[in-house]
Length: 348
Ligand code: 5GP
Ligand code: MN
Figure 1 (spheres, rainbow, N blue to C red):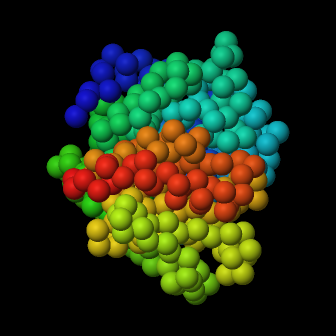
Figure 2 (figure 1 turned 90 degrees about the vertical axis):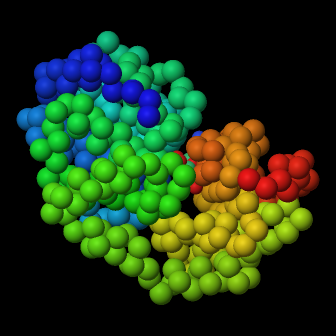
């Protein structure tokens, strides 16, 4: 494991936040379990240092994440843009968690960039995605780590605050940990990941409850949408070991889809025997959004970055196509498959 938390750097950061009255914690657009879990965990950690902070998200997160300890005070930029931008422009320290480019924070991105260029603002990125952009004052990045939650945990250890991790903070960290590691399934999981989980369970947090809150809270409409998507909208390309699922706005509305309802669909497509590359394409109001997944050596990060204005991790990436129709994006995707044939047909 790369040592991104060099003692000198983390001590300096600890001193800086302890001397700050206005600390803001941000994460990426459409926050997932790791984004919001890590943000609230850091807020709990800072509170144990005697530092109060404000969590600001670009927009809302799904209902299955709406139980995290501390979430009631989160501010949302899409609800109160002026207020959130004022918080960032007045901040002495701005944390950027689970993203490494201002554009990933959506409409909050320009405020993050301003904070980085302002005299009094100090921007700290803590993230695990590849190829960070150069905008932060301090970059704590480790793409070999499976979740930002693990990095927040390592920060707590580097700050000698292991004993300050209480059950509330542990629940937030555990949420990030299980959502970004596929409940300890992905290759990024190490013995350190399990050691961290062991420590978190030792705080008295209820891991089974956390798992149920996240994964056993499906609405009937969501189950019906999933059945429809897999039953009627799944296209399989056996010659390329690939599968694509797409949903239009009309279809999403027909099933009364809510934020987060389609999370996990792409993994169902990837779980088909022999499939090495799966994509879920979704029509949004202002863009077409896609989730890409792969197994083994095939890099979906490269596909997303090269063709769909996106990025992410080697086996899990995303992209967005503003101003393009759903049909056009799906056609482009299908047309691309032959150019990746040799990589997709190889084992491993
Ligand atoms: P998901 O498919 O779960 O939304 O995202 C998978 C991974 O790709 C996550 O690590 C996420 O941060 C990243 N990702 C998703 N959408 C985008 C995007 O539009 N641009 C970039 N650079 N990364 C993305
Ligand atoms: Mn993450």
